[in-house]
Image (tube, rainbow, N blue to C red):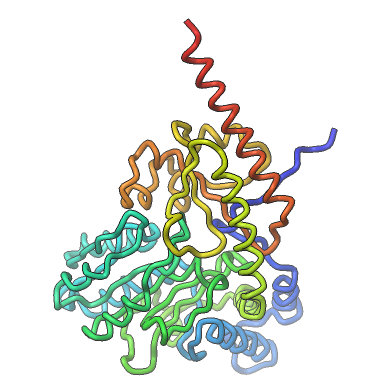
Length: 391
């Protein structure tokens, strides 16, 4: 008997490595295996050249210059380095740290950790779609040091008004950090246009390898100052010591190059497919799209079905890989902090399921996923009806 067909609809969690990316990585596992810090022989020179090329590719994708790119293990480390590095450099008297309640847990937990070390923190108000209310920035303390707001939400795909936030930060002399993990490769990004002083990204969200990411740190005026979280041999301009992951960095560079070259083609395809999936799912009674009235990044669709839990639906959703609950919290069964911050009732937030599409998604998979979701909802509702009908 053939095994059940599997459809991957969880690209916001991670993406498959593009074969072209893997091809770019392979030499640095084998014949070009040198340490990029080895400056006295060809193996080291080859490894260093790979990091130089990759740094340039990352910079081109986000409109930066190469010396402003620091390689990390991923967006979680980049976010921590941005927030904690800036806060610890300036000290508890350096100013307040401001964020929003719908950020990724790597930002929220870093902010909470700073609060425990006596830093002053504030959270900006949001509207019912999860967008930051700009008037909230007018109400933060004049002593604010840094604001951290993501570009595209990891659960709903809602885009934040980062250009306006960046402009307001510059007017008040406040540093601005953007977590662009879910937006890189999906929309055009230029750090100067966004007013970003720091910007985080991750390789495995853009068809690159896991375990590698980058942090943009503005070196042009106003120059950003921060304290390293990892001490050692002084790699990455002293911001992030440790032997560089050359194969991963080469893969990140290749993934950024492909993202830049294919951005419009990928976005057109994925937007069309996301809209078709949404149209089909919205035809099912009781289905609601979270963040559907706001501008969203192309690949994420977050829905809930009335009176049916996300976990319950997933047990009936055969062969389709999606996320539920707090999508980026390991093993969490708690209601999504993003949706509850948007004012969604906790029970409805537990019902949420996130579909996310990608470069390899086919039209046939979109149709099949919608069909399987409708079948799961009908089956679940039938089971509920039988339960209440039984004496």
